[in-house]
Image 1 (cartoon, helix red, strand yellow):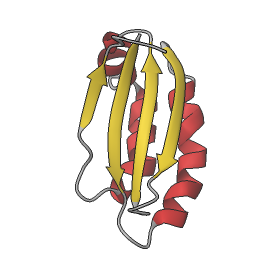
Image 2 (cartoon, helix red, strand yellow; image 1 turned 90 degrees about the horizontal axis):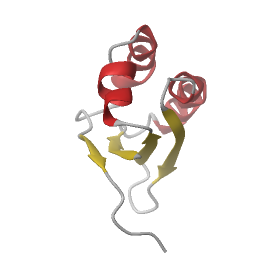
Image 3 (tube, one colour; image 1 turned 60 degrees about the vertical axis):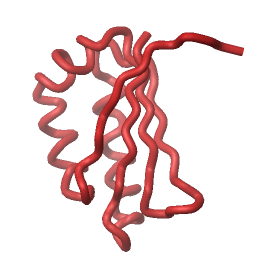
Image 4 (tube, one colour; image 1 turned 45 degrees about the vertical axis):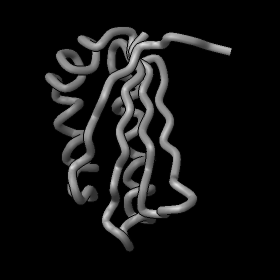
Amino acid sequence: MILEHALLPVRPGEEAAFETTLAQALPIIRSAPGCLGVTVSRCVERPAGYLLLVQWRSIEDHQTGFRGSPAYDEWRALLHHFYDPFPVVEHFTPVAEA
């Protein structure tokens, strides 16, 4: 399993519009082959900051499968204009669990 992590810096004042659009976008990523689950959380200290966590079966499912698909084009069109600066996306593999 791969955990995708992205801090989403939404432009201040656009949080409500982002959250409305996010509700439309989440089914797109959730239905991607290899997506095992997705959560988005809002930062308490920085209300314009969001944390995206996506569980993927493999890194290829994300980077090649989803990002190479028409679904990603739709995801990008819905959400990417909200970010400033553009988020850094990183991938993690589990090493411990409690």
